[in-house]
Amino acid sequence: MTVAALRAPLDIQALRAARAAAAIGHAIEHFETLGSTSDRARELAEAGAPEGVVVIAEKQTQGRGRLGRRWESPPNRNLYVSILLRPAIDAEEAPLLALVAGLATAEAVAEWAPQAQIKWPNDVLIDGRKTAGILTELYTEAEQLAVIAGIGVNLNLGLDELPPELRDKATSVYAATGRAVDRAVFAATLLSKLEERYRQFRTSGFAAMRQHWNARSCLNGHRVTISGAGVTQRGKVIGMGDDGTLQLLSEEGTEMRVVAGDVTVLDGYGSSVAKQE
Ligand code: BT5
Image (cartoon, rainbow, N blue to C red):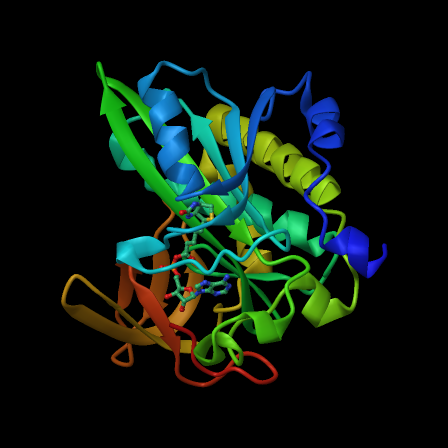
């Protein structure tokens, strides 16, 4: 793929053709610029759109991460996608969908960068640097749960296009591997992996994919602190439990289960980055 092709808008016709008969991506909205694809997906959810509707933007002006953090979303380089799901599950189980989406995203990235790993709860890293992030948001309308899975993946981004403070902790598939990515092909791969894992989740639950998740986890065996909701826990990561909680062994030997939080790795897990936000 040439540099010019790298910087062209994604081939939306090819992507639509690839997903026309699929459950996830049967309808795809494609925008040059949006505030956030997840805001547009929410509007569609509120208007009664069916499960599997997808929104993609070439650029986001208000791309967001968790807890109001910003997601850098420069044009025509990466994938910014939000997917509407309407799972028949209780709201308490919905956080598991973030893990399902994280696994599917890591599996898609691994088709280009086999070393891709997941950093709990759902960042995807290549060589210890963040390449993708996932934001799942839940809405309940008329007692029906709608989940918007928002996924951002750095594909053809050059590191010099990121703000300086992110350059030593983020990367893209291209920057890490030298492989330019056809973004329509990547998007089709991601939606297909998500459909596969989502179907498995609905039929067999998260437990059925726990081992695959653990096999891709960069935290297992490492000493970490996890902070969230005003509490910091410290211990060695044992792995992901069937219930989607991260299992930690404290320095006193007590087993703990953590539902959510931001992880700092204390002993380093990759080549160059010892600490991620
Ligand atoms: C996330 O939040 O990682 C979730 C990101 C979800 C983005 C997608 S894009 C499509 C959809 N529409 C949206 O508006 N959002 C979703 P969090 O774990 O809070 O991480 C945010 C942190 O990642 C920031 O504070 C930065 O440190 C870092 N960061 C920001 N932009 C980045 C980028 N492009 N690549 C790597 N790291 C980035």
